Image 1 (spheres, one colour):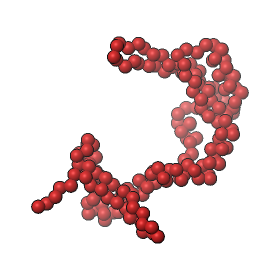
Image 2 (cartoon, one colour):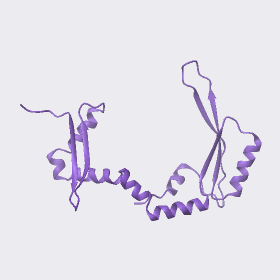
Image 3 (tube, rainbow, N blue to C red):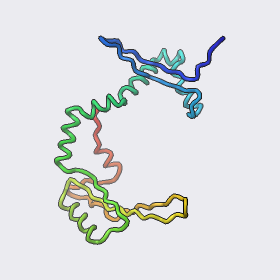
Amino acid sequence: MPTFPARWKVYHLTGALLVQIDQALQVSLLSDESPQHKSNQLFYLTRGSFKRRLLDDLWKAKRATSPKSLAQVITSKTVIDAMRKELKSGGFHYAVAAQHFAKSMERTLQYLNAAMPRAWFYAVELVCFAAEAGAPAAFEARAVLVPPTGPGKPPHDETTFLGLVNLPT
């Protein structure tokens, strides 16, 4: 009588002094995931996938983004040195959120933006709109103060900001 497994698991074995066993793939046919996602995962078990070694690529990607691998990257000397340098420079984006900002608070944030060339201070008002009993409240965020750009302050648009983020490879 043929069997029809509802859950498929594939493991990668790394031979060394101690054999390391890592799960490379898991597909549950009874899960809530879409049929498209399940069939995409099961594709890795086909002959064509094995010939092109796609399962190896999947395992390498999964291994590179595993908590253990990410912890090794984050705790590496290069990343720690970069974090120390950034902490010493004070180059951060600070968002101060409140329901309302007094003019004195806005002036304080303007002063901090001028006095700290490597830091960006934003004032964001969060306005809560009352909801009926039992219904979720709605919030609106308004940027009241945005740091200026200019000498010592690089542009702070999203694209430029994301371009400044250097991830180790």
